[in-house]
Every structure is written in structure tokens, then in C-alpha cells.
Length: 495
Image (cartoon, rainbow, N blue to C red; front, top):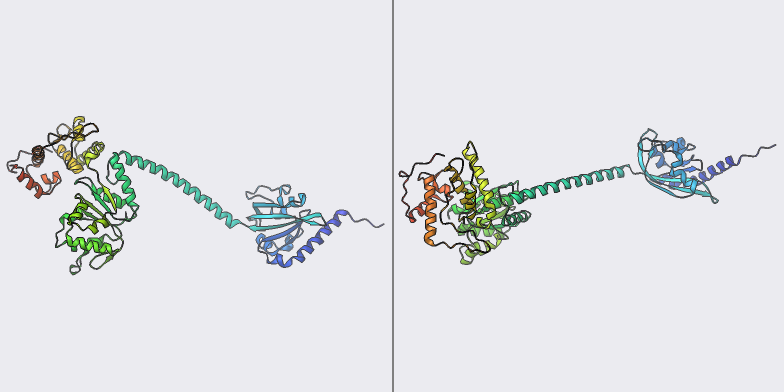
């Protein structure tokens, strides 16, 4: 009696025939596809494999056909842990008849290595019956690696941003309390405004004009702008226009080809040219500077500089000078793109104690005293109430002179009397007559001469102590009728 063929074996042969027909009918597509494609029957056995799949898996099609595909290439997770075939989305397609898409799993190669894949498992039906699935996959290892690097980079950027925000908050607090590392000291509203203006000016390429009285720290502001800007590593070339004669001003700025001499403009290439007291710039030098600015470049004798920023400072009113005709109006407007007004010390009285302590620290280091000198509370109040016509420079000189005359570790503050009263919202400043002003100036000069043993000129002289030119001091001594000979000076007190 003929034995009846088991239904399961018949179904398997029918399934294999079906998949052979699918592979044959779609051979050209399967061979041309860049993605891996393979088919499995309802038992999970491989029915066909296209060339791209064989290449990515490292197996030949003959080695894979007929084998349990999950056990061969999908048996473990990326960490090596077992991946049970009951959990396999590929097999689930022919169990539940639904399409399964997976974005991040691994297939194992013949050599034991793995690669990340994304795939789609689509159920295949024959006359309405699910007989297996077709799987289309692609290698996403490079994309995944790029994504990991991007996430790591973004994480590092976030970490650095948080670090910078913390450091910025710390630095801003330091600035608010005392100033910044470039020597600008102050917590007053006036100095906070200056610090904000420095930040704005540093972020721009435009020329800057710093106005303000003598001794208000205009050069400190200029250097802070330069050092904070992108030019901070480039030269900062200073030109004191008060020292330029008509004859030498052009060669000093633009160079002298006859002497193979480079001008200050050439030296400032890529950096900042700082013109101190620009109101004293001789007319011919003003004309040449204006011409170079109009041309969009600064010309020196043998060199053309096209990348220079100009910061100008003046204790004189350059706008008024331009109206009078003593300063070229066109040059003024080209230099005055970003105006900054350096506040006087009487406009920032909250900073006087900070500045006094700073200057005293410098004096202590300079004099190398065995124990630090101090300023009494009473003297600090006097310093805060004084009018400071010479601004911070005068304050520095008063502190240094007081240190020279110190007794018992405490400096002696020598200020002219009477002092101008501290102006408040409810009290006007005391009016000082011309005679009082002359007496005050005379007392200040006599104190300086006394501290220096009558010496006016040179290092350690009264002119240096007062922060003015020796010729100016000599002229004031004469006009004030001060009869003070060095040979008749009182004996200098010990330092």
C-alpha cells in the first residue's frame, strides 16, 4: 500500500518551489540591488540570498541556503548576549503576517565580527497562506558611528558651554567688584559703563575716540579694547602726539625711505595704532592720516598697511578744535566712530578706596617695606571727598608721596586745603576762588618739592611725582612765586 506523503513535507517542498520561482523571476533585481536581500521559509530556513547580502555577511549563498538564518547571522545582540529566535522580528513576520521594521540591530559575519543593520521583514503569501518572509537590510555602521561621534561632540560642546558660562559668571563678578586683569579697577556705575563700552568696541573693527581729562586712564581703556579684540595678539603701537614736532611727525608715523626707517603705522600692521593726545598732531600729519583713511589703507614709506585699527585719545575737545579749524573736521569724524568718555575720578568716588588700595599695594612692593603700609579710615574719607583735578594719576602720586613720608606703618596723606566738598543730590559743591585754587596748587607743589628734596627734573624729581612735565612744573613754580632752592631744601625724611 502506497504511503501517504506527510502534509508538512509537501508544504515545505511547495514553499521551496515558491521561493525558487520568486528568486528566478526577480533575479536581475536581486543581483543589481545594493541592499542585502534574503528569503526564509516558515521554518526560518534560508531560501535564497542575493549577492549583496552574501558579500556583507561573508558567506556564500550556497553556505546559507537551507540553514536556520537566525542561528547563523542573528543569534546574539551586540554585547554578545543570546538573541532567542522567538524574539526575532524577522521570524515574527511569517508568524503574525505583519511587516516588521527594525532600525538598530546587528548581524554576525562568518568571521565572527558584527555590523549594525536596519532591516524590514515582509511576510510572503502563496495563495493567501503565509509561507515565509523576505528581508531587506543595509549596513548602517558608518552612519551609526557618525551619529555617536556627533552626540559625543554635542555633549562635549554642552559641557564646555556650561564650563564657560560658569567661568564667565565668575569673571563678570570679578569685574563688577574690582575691575579686570588689564588694570581697569572700579565697581562704580561709571566704570561698569566703560567696561561695557570696551566690550562693544572690542567686537568691532571701527576706530575709537577716547575723550577725558588728564589722568583718567585713557591708555588703559585703549589697551583693554586692543587686548580683548581679535587683534589682541598683534602689536599695540603707541604714539604720543605731544612729543611730535612738525618736522618729524610724518617720518615718525609714515617712515623715512632715505633712512630705511619704518613708521609707526607700518609697525602697527595687523594690530592697533594708539594716538595719544591726537589734538597735538601737526597739521601736515593730520592731512596725510586723513588721506590714508580716505583711501581705505594706511601708507608708509615702503609698505602699505591695510589692516590697522586706530584708537585715538585726547584730553582736549577735538570736536571744538575741529570747529575752530585747529583739527581737521573730516579726520575727527573718521576717528570718532565709537566715542568713549573716560570718567573723572570725582565722577566715580566709589572707586577711590579701591584705587588707593591698589596704588598702595604697588608702593609696598616698590619700597619693599618690612610690613605693609596702611591708610587710616580718616585719611580714606579725605581721599574720597577730595576733588582730584589730576584724577587717578594725582591719587597715585599722593599715595606714593604719603608712603615716602610714612611714620609708624601709616602713610601721611598730604592734600591741599580747603578741599572741594563732595557733591550730593542735596548739596552743591563748594565754590573755590582763584586765590584759594592758587594756594592749593602752591601747597601741593611745595609738598612735592619737600618730598623730593627740591629736585624738579629727572627720575625721583617732583615733576615725576606730580605726573607733569618738568618744564611745566618749573613754570608753575615761577608763576606761583615759590622760592625753593634744592640746596636750601629741608633734609629728606628717611624712606
